[in-house]
Length: 524
Image 1: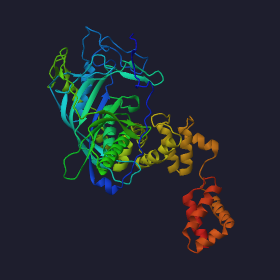
Image 2 (image 1 turned 180 degrees about the vertical axis):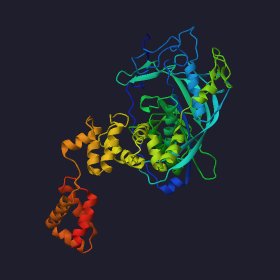
Image 3 (image 1 turned 60 degrees about the horizontal axis):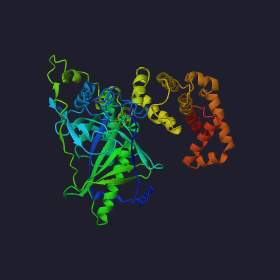
Image 4 (image 1 turned 180 degrees about the horizontal axis):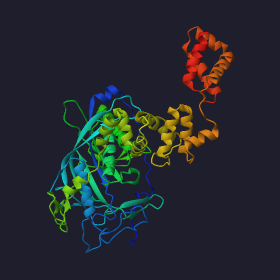
């Protein structure tokens, strides 16, 4: 419908600029402990909606360029905004889920600034009178692979506001030209502004992960950061104990949970380096370069930008139905409160109470919605120990996915197939090695049941005492030196012999029987 807006980007010599990043420096834990980081997040989440915040254009911004643009989105003179009720409901649900105080009356403002992908010259937002304020988010901080127990953290929420997104600039370095796609212009956003009360990068990453899960549960936002559905701005500063807060920098538009931690860690280290070398941290906006693993200066903020906020004259105050009486034209807060689903923290507590799972396992299971669904489905079988299900999912299942680089949301494993593997393992039909082999075959797309795979490959576990004794005797006869070392008190020799027996049986031997039989034979 609309042609691409065009403008040229050239340096004075007509060539593009090549940036060379400075070599990163590392600092000892002792040096880092002299400084206290202070971190606050601002999260922009795209609301799941069929149409945009103030127009009827569809929200498929990933479609054909400028295919989802209404006259209002392109700021055609004479067009007016019409508020999308579904977006207001999503904002109220988010506020309820985050324990915020919902304002019965809120209003919209115009935030003025010039950029090529903002054709109107202002953004409609709720800076001064937002839809909700004064909430909090409780979350679990756990870093996989780090030997540190998880702990509970609470971050306060300053406000939640509705606003529209801007368009997207597409830069062509070869043509020295930028084009503007307005498909994203007007996409409905919820901005969640957190207070600066986080102390390290892992807390920030854990907060973002928890927020994504909550917004996904209430069907407010998909949380797919790789698609731009959720973006994070991080405000970072450092100061010494008992000293005033330091100058903060803002890292804009971080697009993954892990990048949140990496960007904040780098920025903390950068500010420490500046301070240790006697320099001054300046108030500026920076971006995260994932390839170079550095934050890069975007613009100076020493002089506060005047956005010239003014009330949006074309939108009346947003009024909500707070008491549940019959006001069909208003969003009903009471009704939405009743629709709130079980939230992640409630699920964790229920899993620990119902199944007796550990806190760490519960955090890992709930943090991945796919794992949670698999666990709940498999654990419906009363004959299966839920703790064994957790062990299989967290250790064996995830290992196979990581080995083959399979995204956790992109596989076709039937829950009953994993349940069948557990039954076969408990019934001593297969051992743990075969379970892992069959699980890998199933994950890679084999549609046969585990029983059919085991039978076709003759992978049944060897439980015959006579066969087990023969396997042990043969290995002892082939390795007399190892036998003698064991008798001399070398404990490693026993492990060597059991490994040989496992190999000779093609990993089919019942290793518990092997250990008992081998122990008795070595006593003779």
